[in-house]
Every structure is written in structure tokens, then in C-alpha cells.
Image (tube, rainbow, N blue to C red; front, side, top):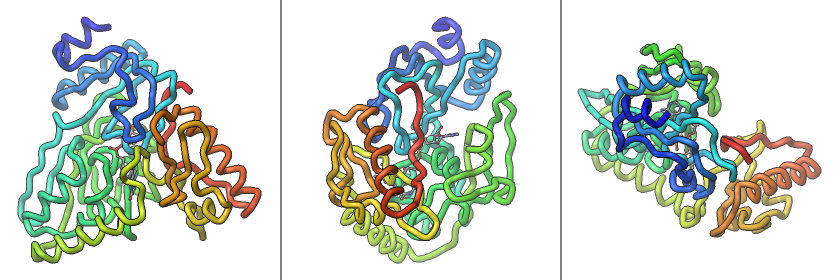
Length: 299
Ligand SMILES: Cc1cc2nc3c(=O)[nH]c(=O)nc-3n(C[C@H](O)[C@H](O)[C@H](O)COP(=O)(O)OP(=O)(O)OC[C@H]3O[C@@H](n4cnc5c(N)ncnc54)[C@H](O)[C@@H]3O)c2cc1C
């Protein structure tokens, strides 16, 4: 396949046996057979069509901040929509952003333009593509509130632009996650505000995050979705699991909803710890936790 991939993308954008631990915030994950970085929509489309024709499975990677990649890696292709597709354009109170842009970069750009609404997302370490796909949220806000339109590519390489209402956003889900659509870009609808007020809100969110979350250690953020009527972190803490460790994976002492990689955790360590937490929390509270982190590849 190398020849075909290089013809579409150029030699410099084709990587074979790429260690996924380099591309996940957990710093865990075996090798991907192929790791490809299309530079634009045209290349992406050509690639998707070839993969479909050859029956090769592919996975779209953003910033790798919500993933647990298996120790045996990923068969097929990882398509990385990263900083090669991270254009940001602000016009009036709207902001067009390509999917590879990192949320903090977008938050800073709109703050400098005196636009409010994006502050809640400034500390989420994802890309626009991942955040739209997941309908990422924090501090009682979510992507759904600020998105005007989203441009995506379906599995046949066709490109569409849809309105917020058509995105079918729910708690950490969207039409994109339900159909494996590739998010290409989004337009955000924001409000004018003073630069200082926006900055203050961003600083407030940052200090709340730094004091409550183990940002100094590799993780994938909150491992579990918020169960109805509860907080996963509180249930785990009340089960006495703070600091509980399997191999190199540990329930964070700072925030029980996070699992941290203490240095040499394998995906299996994390998976075993997740199963153990689910079992103990269910025994104690009758609540079955559901993972928010996506498990990808072979374990
Ligand atoms: C320290 C820390 C704090 C966090 N805090 C929060 C928080 O407050 N709120 C929150 O919601 N999340 C939080 N997260 C989780 C994570 O940052 C979000 O889920 C984020 O939206 C994932 O974006 P990503 O680009 O890293 O996606 P990835 O992890 O790369 O991928 C996640 C999913 O999105 C898909 N995807 C990525 N890009 C695209 C694309 N362009 N098109 C289609 N599918 C795509 C992937 O296929 C995968 O299924 C946190 C994570 C960490 C490590």
C-alpha cells in the first residue's frame, strides 16, 4: 500500500508501524500499521476512497486526548487530522475553524478578537474535530451551544455542511459519532465581550482545572461518563479507590474520575483497572459506569 499512499499524500505524510503512545495523552498504545497525515480535503477524499475500495479499515485521530489504544496497536490506517489542517478565520462574531485546530489555540484566538462563548473549552486538550465528534463539554457548557454549522465527510468521501440542529448532539455524542463521519471544520457563533472579562473567565476555568485535575500526569481525562444523578469521581472515591493501582495505572489521588499513567502503564493495566472500578462501584452503589474514553485497536 505504501506506493498508493505516497502517491496520494507524498512520502513525508506516510508512516508505517507508528507507535500510538506518541499520539495519545495517556502515552499508551501499540503501533498503527499505517499513520497518514492528509494535508487537505482533496487528499483526504482520495484516501478515503482508496481505503474503501481496498477494504482497509481506518480510524480518525484528533489530539488523542480521549483514547485508550490497545497494546497490540491498530490494524489498518490511522488518519491524523492535526496541525496541517488547523486554519482559524474570524469574521464578525463568527469563527470558522478546521478540525485539526487545538481548542486552547481557538480559545486564545477568539479571546483576542473579543469574542465570548468558547471559554469553557479552553482547557480541554482536544482538537476541534474530536470536540465536535464528542460534543465535548465542561462547566455546564458544551460544544452544542456555540456551533452554527459543521462540515463533514462521509465514508464515501462526500462532503456536506449541516446546521447545529442537524448535528443531533447529545451527552458526548453527535451525528458524527453515530455514523463515523469525519469532521472537517466548524463555524462557531460567539458574542462580543470585553477582552478582559473573557480572559478572566478563562483564567478562572484554568485555575479550577489545575487545582482539581492531575494535569501533571498522562491521562485521558474523565474515564467514565457522568451517570444520571451521580458523579463518577464521587462514586469511585466513596468506594475507597483513590490511589488504587494495577500495574502502572492508578486511580488519581487528586481526582478519582481520572486514571493516570504513573510511567509505564500498559493498556491492559488501564483496562483491568477500569473493569475493577466498574465492579466495585456497582457492588457499592448499584450504578454501572460507562466509559467516556474510547477503546481503540487490539488489546
Ligand atoms: C486532562 C484532560 C482533561 C479533559 N477534560 C475534558 C473536559 O473537561 N470535557 C470533555 O468533554 N473532555 C475532556 N477531556 C477529553 C478529551 O479532551 C475530549 O473528549 C476531546 O474532545 C477529544 O478530542 P481529541 O481531538 O483529542 O479526540 P481524540 O481523542 O483523538 O478522538 C476522540 C474521538 O473523536 C474522534 N475524532 C477525532 N477527530 C475527529 C474528526 N476530525 N472527525 C471525526 N472524528 C474525530 C476519534 O475518532 C475518536 O473516536 C479531557 C482529557 C484530558 C486528557
